[in-house]
Length: 250
Image (cartoon, rainbow, N blue to C red):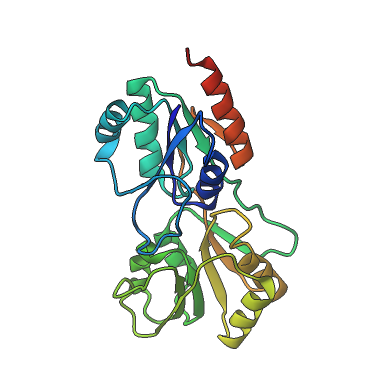
């Protein structure tokens, strides 16, 4: 069975690892290409977009794809909408593999907002030392608040993505450690953390560290994804779904 995994996440990599070597499955992992040095995968991989829902529909037909697993980042709303539309057009079964969102715990001081622009407003006018962990592509809105000092952590170099006078950049890749996160925030005298609600364990230590230091965390909530797509939370559950789909193929 020919499978397309829309990836770029830990969950996509985990599913690819489970499918590797299984003779009845022929997986193809697709990544957007936003990371210049992606980790090697145990299954064939393609890099780049599809050209919208219509382009993805053509790809599914041309490649004989029999099932799609959308394991993209929780904030990758466009590709999820395109996948839902393309699968409707081609009648290809679609599953969403989505990690659960983080939820506020006792001791958390969260300020939940719906966009990066709202996150900028939530910082206020008084200068603050801000730990930004929202990804390189989401940095531009913070340029309108140059009074703050920004500590930015991304996988890729930020270049000129944040045009502000006081910016320090760290290149690092999850998973992170709570104790190390706490030391970083203390050393940099962080006043507030800004993050997407990406979910998962790999980057959650920053939430725990902020909680222990009693720091406020501005949390950007997830965009809405297609609600009519069947959804699971783990690679094992996605594998079970693929087994069921395979069993229905004549």
